[in-house]
Image (tube, rainbow, N blue to C red; front, side, top):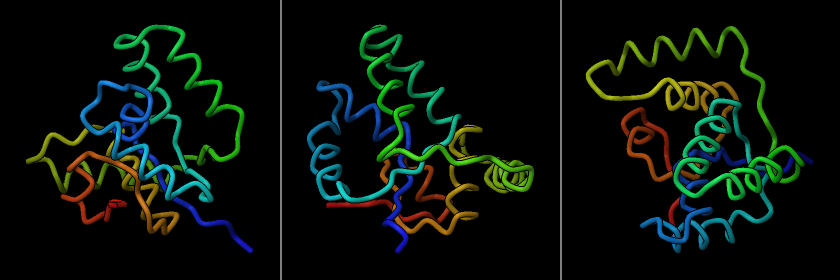
Length: 136
C-alpha cells in the first residue's frame, strides 16, 4: 500500500526550524497531524530552506535540517524531470503578474505531476495557483 504523501514547502520547513517564526506553533501542530506521511521535497526547496536557515539561524541549524532531509524517511526527494521544468516555465508565464519564485513554480509543477493532494506550506502563492494547503 502506498503511504500518504504530502509536499512540504520552504515556508513550513522554516516555521518548523525557527521558534521565532510566526507560524512555528501552527507548523508543529500540522507536522503532528502529518506524522505518518511521506514528505515530498525537491532539491530547490532544500536549497532555498538551507540558505534561509544558514543566514537567519546559523550553520548548525542549517546543517541539522540538511542532515534530516538527506537521511530519508519521512523525506523523499522527488526527481525533477524535463516535463516538470517545462510545466514550471508555463506556470511562471501564466502567473507573471504575481511574484512567484522559480522554486514555488517548480513545487506547483511537481505537486500537479505527482498528483499530491496535501501541501504543507504557509505561502499564499500556492493558493493562487489552485493548490490546497493543509490546515488545522
